Image (cartoon, rainbow, N blue to C red; front, side, top):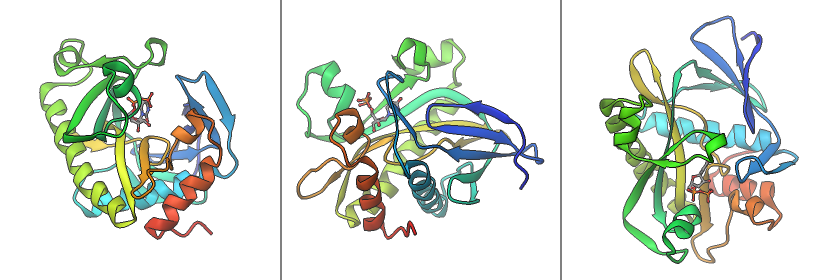
Length: 237
Ligand code: UDP
């Protein structure tokens, strides 16, 4: 697949056109950012680890019948994906309280959330990705009612698949963020699933094995991602 001009470069990934208008190349970089880009660093191996991790998870989701943009991993840092019209909405499911939920509501970290919660955020760095709801999304044209319904169903389906997958590896899936797009009229999972966009804790010790290690300056960020991968049976070398 021929890599053509760069379409877009985000905080951790870049997107390139290919000779096929329906396909794009996603490049996973070592850049890592938090707090709406205020904290930035290069973490050696992270792009490669996330590319391999994401390919593994997307294959599992595809096998479970979830429509994803993922086509195949091309090499260490690049994957081929479907070219979609992305919706500017982030869908977050939480199984355990952490992060912005605790700050916003003043609830303690680590509480089991039953049933799991579902939140929507607008993808807008300048506004700090504000929390929104379905009414706002429809009124401002960020997504239709039908699209929001599909996104919610798929986000919960992902929870069922991944909570189990991580549990079998001795990990708690605390929360995660998904992004969707439209491909040939169908709501399709886009972006990535890696420890950059979810929270994973060791089931016994509750040690953090995700991007909170970077946010909180705990160190061993990529090592933790690799540890999660190893427990899932992912071969990184
Ligand atoms: N998340 C993300 N990108 C964002 C915001 C959140 O990937 O722009 C992920 C985050 O890693 C966590 C989940 O979504 O797994 C919920 O994040 P939260 O709302 O708690 O915000 P945070 O504390 O990460 O700012």
